[in-house]
Image 1: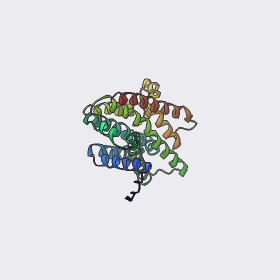
Image 2 (image 1 turned 60 degrees about the vertical axis):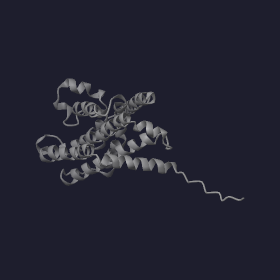
Image 3 (image 1 turned 45 degrees about the vertical axis):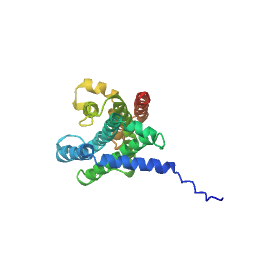
Image 4 (image 1 turned 135 degrees about the vertical axis):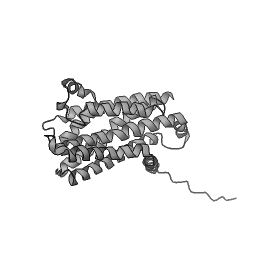
Length: 255
């Protein structure tokens, strides 16, 4: 008896990654505790300190803070978007379920990286519009594109740090640990104000923080760090990303 062979289902690897990234973005978009501070704090601080008080600061606050608040903004999707969700997923057994599903093994992490980069792009766009309309910032197209590139790629080291946090602690502790890293590092890296106005020892310690290196790249993109050598900062950020990704992988493999 002849049997009618059914066509094999079509499988698209890229579609799997795209759907997982879309779902991860929607998941974070529906979390008010994440999306509101992530998207509102950088533009709000920029309006307050660059637009309202910038004319009294004695330096180009509108341009300087465009770069540094952009870095402050893109740190959040990496630290909180991965740190808290990975910790929560581990605690609830979601990671174990993901491993059992017929999906590409890297889709879970890739979707979170894509989510963080998309939020970084949204933060960049919001700051760019506000800085041009309210802050009077005028930059050449090459500067805007360089700043966008640094913001999008600069989120990756903080994703690695967030992934390590999520692999290390539980869901209830992850937000506190991420905040203990996020806020002090932002201040010590000169993202809120130039390091020149802070004590000298803070300036000397600044190269220890990945946010400082990303801040220097962003400032160089907008012409606020003339003559800055970019390669050491890129290498430092790549080292941070590789180190924390490796540490997180070892933790997650152990279960």
